[in-house]
Length: 172
Image 1 (cartoon, rainbow, N blue to C red):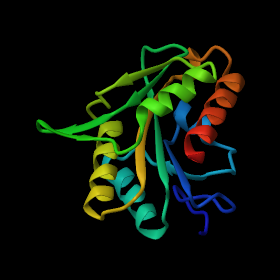
Image 2: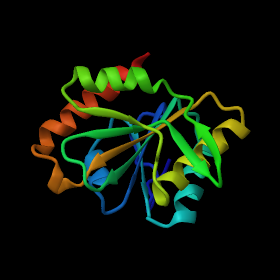
Image 3: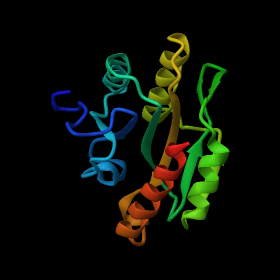
Image 4: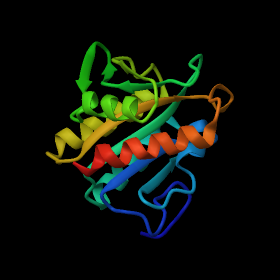
């Protein structure tokens, strides 16, 4: 795939797609990784979902792991289980309990949450899960909230722990 603004980067694995919103700690987290396919989202509630569903329509992924930043958390991560819209809920098809175990094993502090928020993160998650389910895809999608950069004590260590956890989670 040719690298374009907000598109997947060349040389990355086609099995795992990581997404992150531009200008956030999530973008900083996945920037520079070449083990996975990275999708940088423009922080536009409609275009974010369009870019994700376009990527899903172009390649087959085993996992989509979307990252967003959550205010008021420090050195913790939230594994989101559920996206919602007008009283309707869609639960992830990924094994979030297994993900939590790998994060904890690698020194992170994971919290299971059923509230992906009310805006960008929830909308992306909702539309990604809808697309996967409506198209009968075998792709597993999960959303992970991480702290703002200022709330991560040692970012390099945090990133190493995060990617060690993801490598274990996605190998099964």
